[in-house]
Image (cartoon, rainbow, N blue to C red; front, side):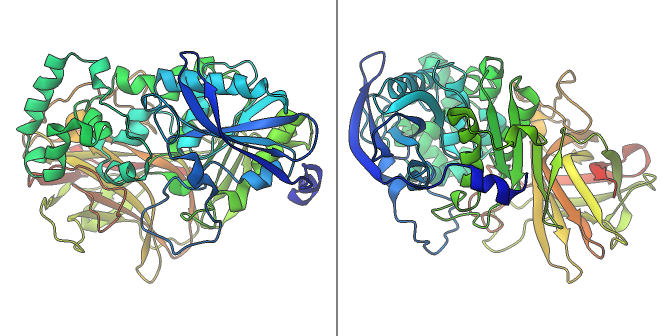
Length: 558
C-alpha cells in the first residue's frame, strides 16, 4: 500500500483537547508520581499512550517554533511525542515524571527495577480510568523509548504494543562505555538537562562501602583523574553527579548495567514492537534497534531512517509520527491499514537516499568482503599485499581545533557505486608501547573535492580486547568487558573492533575512507567524545604479510 493510501486510512484529526495538570498516581509502595493527562474533549473511551521520563513533563510542551540549532544534540524537550497530533486523532496522552524527578515524589532510580515497576503501575492506572478503553501503548524517543522496552518486560496486562524510537538496549555498550571507553562528553552535558535532585549513588546497592572506597582510591591515583579536575570532583563529591560517580567506579559490565539493559529481558517482552532508529544515531541508540531485531521473539517491525532535523525541538515527530500513528491504529484501535502485511524491515539507503524494504538483517545477499589496509594508505579488496607499518602517537594535550593524529586508509576513486549495508568490523593488527590505549575508528564518505562526512564509528579500549567467542560473529565481534587485561608492550596483537551498522552507497568517483586514531576530541564532536588514554602512546598499525589488517565490509551487489 502506498504512503498516500494508508495516510487516508489512519485516524484523522477531529478532536479538541482537555488537559489535566498534575494528577498524582500512587505506586505500589505509596510513592506518588506526577502526570499530565491530555485527552479528547468528547465523551467516550479512548486508547492511551504513556510517555515517561526524568526530563520533566512540562518541557515536553514547549513551543514548536524552531530555535537556532545548538551543538548540544537535544535537551529532552519535545521527546515525549506531539501531544496535539495524537489527541486530535482519538488518543489520550499521559506524560509522567519518573520517581524522584520533576513533580514526582520518591528517589530517582535511573531506569532500574523500581522505575520499571512504576511504569507497570502507571499503565494499569491509565487502563482503569473512565476515559480509557483499556488499550495502552507508549510514546517517545530516547529516554522515553528506552523505558518502553524496560516497562514492557514487566508485562503490564493492558500494555498492548510499544514503539521505541531510538532506544539503546545495552546500558554498558550502547550508552556508557563504547568499547570499554567512557562516553564522557555525553554524560558531562546530559546531567545539566535533567530535573532530579533526589538521586544518590546507586553503586552501594551492588558493592559494599569498603569495595567502593577501594575503587575510588585506585581511581584517584589514575592518570585520567589526576589530569581532570572534573573527574576528581565527581569522585570526591559523589552527590555532585551521582550518575557519573556510578559509571566511574563501575568500568566493567555487570549487574548494575544488566538491570538497566533491555536485552537481558527480551525473553519477557511478548507484545508487538516497532523498532525505529536513525542512521545518525550511531553514537548511542542505533545499535538498540538491531539488538532488538535479533533478540526479540515477538511480532516486530524495524524501520531505520533519517529525519530532516537531527536536532531541535521537534525531532523526529515532524517526519515520522504518522508511522507511529499507523502502528497504534493497528494494535490499539484495530484499524488495519495493511501495515503488518508489508515487509518487516524498511531502511533508508543513504547516498542514493532511497527507502527499501528488506526481510532480514543482516541481508542474506551480503557479500562479506575483506578490504585490506595497505602501503601508501591504500584500502582494497583482493590480497593482503606486502608487510609494512603506519606509526602515530596520540596527543593527550591536543589544542582545540587541531585534528587528532592517526593513520588513514582509503579506497581508490570508485569506478562504480559501492553499497555497504550492515554491520562492519575492523581487524587491526597493531602494537602499543603502553599497557593500555584507546582505538577510535571512523568510516567516512570522501567526495571528489576531498571533503568527507562521517558515516559510522567504532571504539575499543585495548585492555578490553578479549572476545566472547560464543557470542561473536566475524562481522560483529563481542567483547564481554568484564575485566581489563594489560597489553604486552610492543607486541603485535589483533584487535577486533565493532563498527556500528550503516547503509551507505559510496557513489562513483567517491572514496571510502578509514581513519584510525588513538583518541577523539571535542573539536571533532562537541558531544560524543570519550575519556581516552591520557598518556602519550606510540601506536604501530601493521598491514600485509603475517600481520595483515583488514576491514570486513557488508557489500551489497548491485
